[in-house]
Image 1 (cartoon, rainbow over the protein chains, first blue to last red):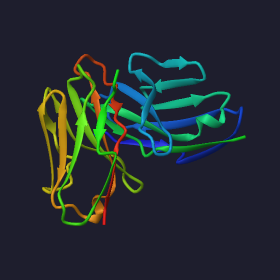
Image 2 (image 1 turned 135 degrees about the horizontal axis):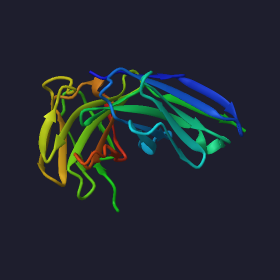
Image 3 (image 1 turned 90 degrees about the vertical axis):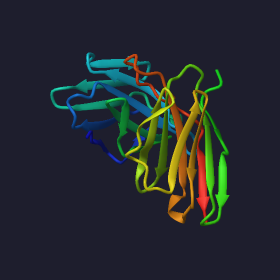
Length: 110
Length: 115
């Protein structure tokens, strides 16, 4: 089955700096890769996703890149703000299911 | 758009008691997923339904857990008897499959504490 590894487990950045979170997956059949943001005590919320026929996708300050050959994908957040502080989860599709990474705690210091 | 609705939001119960968690998916979605989230194990898929039919229950921990989806707008996750190690946040998510779209939208979760 699919296995998703996510790094780093924690990330601290200064406000205004960029943050990058990386994930690797094992199943070459995976074709959908979403990213979720979860604030403390809240539900995971979809922030951006990418499909395997696209290499990069951008939405304002966030972007996701996908390298199918290497089986890894990354989340990039530019000009970080305190409200970006949260836990971020990557996921990869496995059939109709999603397999989630372990999460990255992002702290943006002001 | 109401989003995914879960109830109760918090549940505190004693070991051995039966617990029933409820979920109403987004109207028009045809797939429903139950997840459990803990610090130790992260976000685990317990079971998912497509068109009200259970498709994959390989994540259900043991026979104490059961889930049903009697119609397109309602699902339950039952734990009987409950144990302290069941304490976690349980999320329900819904999606529209199989249009090639796998976006899953999560409910607010039920925080379960078993003492």
